[in-house]
Every structure is written in structure tokens, then in C-alpha cells.
Image 1 (cartoon, one colour):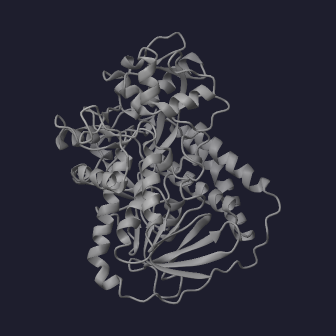
Image 2 (cartoon, rainbow, N blue to C red):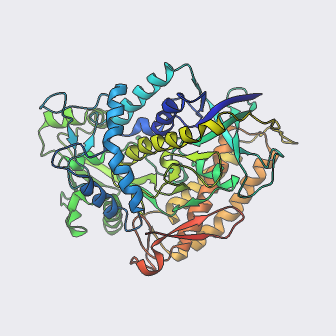
Image 3 (cartoon, rainbow, N blue to C red):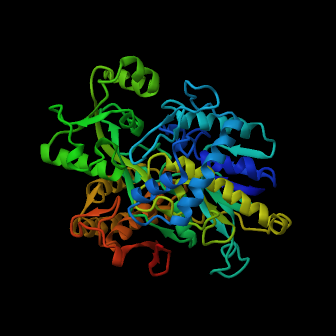
Length: 544
């Protein structure tokens, strides 16, 4: 079956919904999301959204904090663009109905939190459920808009290119016309055509064995864009959140950076604080430093976890400020007002992604990428806490502005005729172990060999061990009818290969990429992005 709309948005988090609400003023919008519409990384975001909102803060301070966190390879013009757009985007969210917490001064003053790497209180939040509140509000607004259609349980497979549809040659002038999408319930594969396609599929945390990400985070947008010929960049920079709850029964529950922002201290099992050994900022150091510090402590001690202690704060304050964290930990037998929280690092955020310009446009005409799927240059080698939601809303607005400027020409163009999906001779897969075994192998290899601390030897070994697995996954894709699990397996295999390739190329330690063979940063040779493109040699993009 064929569906047509002016805009196709793949993903239903803050980036996709923010863009959809604005794009609907231009034309019809179809959103596809592979599980429920609220099953997003946005919905799990605890801390908040960073912006200059207080009298004592400034754009220059926020820019400086972001650049410092980004380890020297943020694009400075993008950092300024995002930071200076931040306050207006926060006001838009408030106008839509997002209930950020206000301070004791009254409704005109937000209660601003502080997190690691920030020099001021600038995090707008809804206690420790900020993402859920933003997602709730945006989904409610989208549901009221007759021009927006959201299709749940639809899994995007691949982008539809003009060249693949026989409508022109492949190359620089190729164009994205939409995507092929699997209906998870019926197994049918539909063609979703659009004049503009936007990838907002989130990150790729499930490439790793342990992650704070939801199960949907399998790198779908990056994998699809790469297979279509788009440029991807900075994929060696995978952020590991320092504090994920350590409990055999807990699944990817993150302990917000805001706990340390409110005075929480990292301690070892003897109760000794250790962060000042690694950075003068102590517990408020940036995430890359804190994650490596915890990794070092665990390797030295052989312990299973370190601990995050906020018991020195009043119990009423802790319960009021962190209601979700308090209740979740209590369900696992931990009263955080009385006992420290066992924590370990876990894969959290991809700082690289599909390379875009300052309006979210990728290297393929008609294709945009927003949110964690994109590499805009804001995060550089390490994302500053709570800059991700900020980037999503700012770039959703900038992308809309570009679409609005282009609309007189693009909006008037008709949808071309395109071929339906052909399954060929594919058969139904009968042994799901073929998928689950490869899935487990990839994630364990990535965790053990391409984690917080890397080495040339481990990267070389994992490259060799991934090759036959990736080859087998590609054969499965040819042999069997597609299922959501097979689509996701194919995508994490692609992301694993891209992360390892990028990590092997960067011969220095910078930000989130720490390699023992090259323990120092080398600005003279490596102040640049590593750009990968299918069937092309890798490129280096210098950073100003």
C-alpha cells in the first residue's frame, strides 16, 4: 500500500513532535514510530533542558561550558546558534503547556537546576520527570492537529531514493522521496512517500550490552541514512552516563545528573569520595571524566559498583526534588534518603550521527536529521548535560524555517510514481535464535572491546570478530521476510561497524574516545571530524 503526505517524520520524540507541530502549518504530516508513540528516549529524560533563563547567567557562559565539555571539536558557530535560540524555544514549550517547575519567587520564575559541567543553574525541569512532561504535552498538541497522523508500531526499513525508484541517476543530485515501512502487526511493507523526510529515531544505546536507553534505540536513522549514501560523522564519540542504577532486577534506570547537581557525592564501598582525584570540579565534572573515573575505580577495586550518596540532604528535599528516582529505588529496596545508591556507567548518548548543516539538512536532498540521530556539531567530543533536549527543539525550529523558505517550490511538486516493496524469494524465519544469538554477540563485543576505555588491540580484535557476524546478518536480510527484530539487528550491526571504524581511525584520546595507545589529545592532527559514507573513502572535516 502507498501513503502520501507532505512531510514524513520517522520517530516521535521531542525533535520529531516539535518539527511536526510547525510543519503542519505548511502541509500534511505523517509520523511513524516503531512502538507506541510515547516509547522514546525523550520520555525517559529526567534532568531537564538547558537554557540561559536566569539573570546571573549569560549566553557566553553557556557557550563556554558547552565548548569546554565538547573537548575542542564543537562547531563554535553552531554552539552559539543553539544557545542563543534556547530561551525562545523554552517559552514556546511553556506556551504549549509544558509544566516546568517554578521557584518560590512565583510563576514568572522557573526553578533552575545545576548539573555537571555547567557553571550556573540553567536547567529547566519538571522534577525528575522532565522528558515525560514534554512528551505528554507535545503528543497532546499533535493529537489535536488534524494535519498530523501518527502511525504506531510501524518500523522504517530503508529510505526511498529517486535513483532506486528509477527516477534519476544516483549521486549528488539524488533525492529522498520517503521510506519503506513495515507494519509490525500485519507484516505488510508499505511505501510512505513525502516531499520532505525527517529522521528523528534517537540514538543507538542498544548496540551495547548495558544502556540507559529504551529498547527502541537501535540506531535506525543513522543506519538508514548511511545505507542511502548520506554522510555520517563522529560515531566514535559514544557517551556513557556515569550513574545507572546497579541492580540485577533493574533495567536501564538512569540516576539523573541532577542528583550530583544538588550535592550528591560519588563514594566507594568504604564511603570515601574519589572524584577530586580525577578533576578539580569533583562530582560536578563532565560526564566523560566521571565515567572514566568510575571505570578506573571499579577496575582497581574489583567491585561491582560505586555509590552515589545524597543522604546528607534532608529526606523531605530528596523526596520532593527526585520523586521518580526515590520511588523507583525504593521499589528495589533502596531508600535513597538513608542509603547511597549503587551505580555504574552505561551507554547513554551518541554525540555523532548523520552529518547536517545549520538547518538540519543532510547530504541527501529532501532528507533532514534532528535530535540524537544528527551530528550538528553542537556536542563535539562530549555532550554537556541537558543540551540534548535543547538541541532537539532548536534544530526542529531551524529545520522548519528552512522548509518554510523552500515550500513554494517543494510544496507545489507532485508525488512521483514509485515501485512497491518486493520481498523477492524471502521466506519466513522459523528459528528466532538466529537473530537473538547475533544480537547478543554484537552487544557483548561492543561492551567489552569498544567501551569507556579502548585500545588498538581490542579494536582490531573486535573488527575481525564482527565481520563474519555482519556478513551473516546481511544474509539473513536477503533470505528472510522482514520482522522488527531482524530490522533492528541489521541496524545495530551497521552501527557497530561504523563505531569501530571511526574509533580505529582516531589516533588520539579526546572527550568520550579514550584509547590507551594515544592517551593525549592532538590538536595539530586531530582537531577534525571523521566522516564516513558508504562506498566512499572516509573524509576528515576540520573544525574551526
